[in-house]
Image (cartoon, rainbow, N blue to C red; front, side, top):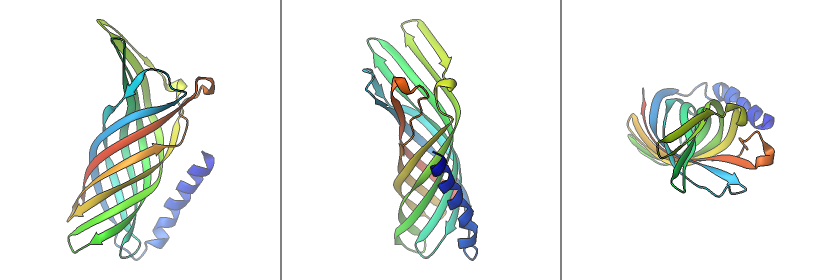
Length: 200
């Protein structure tokens, strides 16, 4: 984890020098997360999708005719929902996520661009809660002490830029075990997201 954070910081620090002569753009974006969790070993319950919000801003830094570096800062809702024998349970994890994406324009015109992208992502935990409902009974608890403060993952996806507007679809594959109790196994984030953005 320490090496991953060091590489991410180094990549951000190298951006201004490499992009000194390029036009830097800024923008906002937001959309829908379809998040779930990967468990090892399998807990037996059927954990499914937690729909959530993802929104924030980005900096777009051209590094050449087709290559762009795009750091982002996003509020991202993750976790999972589960149903088992008439009970509904959920885990809600909220993060401040910082992806640093390398974008390559596969096709490009004066107004439209289709691009593919990938890069590392470091997420800072903001909130962690779990709960369940069974009939009229329900409970909710803070599980911050049972989850790691940071999550490191990789992001890959594709998008289209039309003038100042953009849309993209991406998958974030969590590499970190976010469960602090190693005796209970490993838990990792898995998130599919769809975002729309506007560049100022």
